Image (cartoon, rainbow, N blue to C red; front, side, top):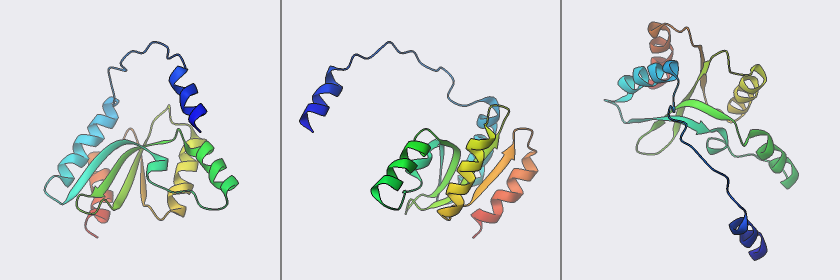
Length: 140
């Protein structure tokens, strides 16, 4: 194990630059809408959360490893949690032209298996659509 750590320390890192923009215009619009909905409640709004931070793969070692490999780079656009307990209330995914259908389907299946509600919205969403759908979960 010590050798692995030493190898990681010795690995040469390339150059980096800032992405400059973390959220697309539509992600920012949805974030601001949801922020307004959660601000006077005991809720926390998170953005760009790794799917594996929301779910824990089960099964034998090989199954968990396969799940980790498959899900490691999958992100959820927005997540609403209880501010006190950290309990996940709802995940929100914006469906834009860049979203791969296979990834969105995988995200939906994994969250359903973990009993985490997911709402998907096209990026041409109407504010009233999002507000109505999300209020159903926030009022539970």
